Image (cartoon, rainbow, N blue to C red):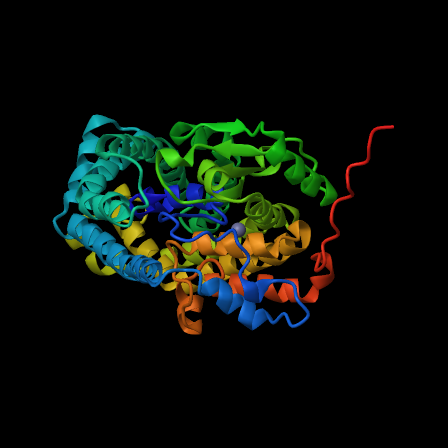
Length: 450
Ligand SMILES: [Zn+2]
């Protein structure tokens, strides 16, 4: 999901958020066989969760630790650089009056305000995409290749970027033109009605995501292999999920990351696993991951996130109303922005959005991480595969820091850390030792036919 840092990120971010990429991500060629349960994690009478966790952690080679720490810590800085870079672009457009000039072009082309906003949006998106490209290219292409996470060569990657741009032009155009129409008609209460419209648009985007947006980039298909689907569907039916389908997606087209997710809203809600998980994961691991995803489904995490987002969106619009008035009254003349309803103020909207969401990063991470923890616990209970779950945590740790400090985890992690996930699994295993056959009974000897 590399296109989120483009300058038009806010709206695409909403779509990405909705696609709900869940257990997500990658892979660096496994150097150890993590499908073996280490000695200290065997279900013996002196099983100890801490020791079992350390035994799993010790299966990861030091070089892999160093690599995933470097990748993940680099991501902390990218949050800051993305914020600063995006802010610099907005300030550039305002201070050079390029934004005002782009608005003047739109006004010359048509007298219809709605179309003026659409034309401005197209100019704005194209200019910010070009200006933002160096960071996008580094983050989405160079860095992903450096860490062995990307599978695309340059032009197919550019193809996906082009599709993302087109999607941003269309969906963003509808959203921005609609919001500016509200600001023009309701000059006092626009921030309330704007929040309502933004939420409606977000729900719409989430709902069409799996059916209309995902297929633009990848090909989702129903998973057919009964060896994989049978245990998954059993688990689904046992947990009240009325489906006979599990979906798979060809994510290996873009990435080596393993992932699975729950996406959609209402009738389009579905569970999808990616082909990297199918190729590299053991049966136990796939079941553990699916148990987690079913947790998101059963506990209605997408509708709950939307409710949380209502609060955030209303706060954002209130902040926007205050911030726009304050800045335009001071610098509006210098920037060539007439009032809040002037589309030339859009870089200011994105500047304020950047500040707001940058400050909120730990809050949003914590909200997501809390749901992920819930899904982890649900998944352990549903799949009963603590070792498969530990294997998944190690696979996902190929691009995430496995053992962060507590403050670091709170600030930057949108999932529990690998260490904490393995530890939860081992605590669960320790409390359910009777499920694991300590003295397997040999299969009955074949009897001679009667
Ligand atoms: Zn999840």
